[in-house]
Image 1 (cartoon, rainbow, N blue to C red):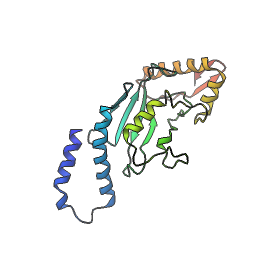
Image 2: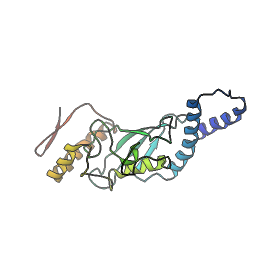
Image 3: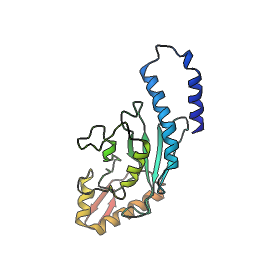
Image 4: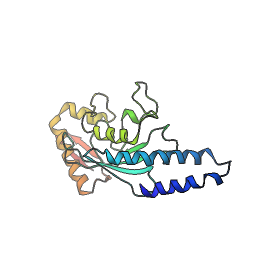
Length: 204
């Protein structure tokens, strides 16, 4: 991103005049922004074909949205928006991610919370966040939630997982309803609560 890169270059030029008492927080933000300048360029060059990243403010690479449009599986033809915030302590801590689109998914709650190992700051299985991970890993992980990382055995949304085990046909029907509503609203979240009764999915 040229805007932020130019800003960082100006910051480099002013280093000699920086007060020796500059806060650790200011220093950490600078480290984060330097990392993101490189990582965003790498990300944009290696985005999955089903993903699109958008930055509302090019001076704030730490806040952006990711749209995932699966081309296979239960969620094919949908468009799911994720909000990604990179904290000041990055890359020692993982980005904060929330799903903005209503989805019936075993690893994503209806409130947008996400279960993805690499986003865990502390993980006993060794698959959690590490400083060696990058934004590219996060994006590819989110994309894989709709394919090979779709996990019905260790769900965050237990109701969705049980629905799948009970009736694979009707869970597809439920997702089709959600996808149609999501597309109508441009991928945004809506207020109604999803209820499931037998082979019917409805809202109220």
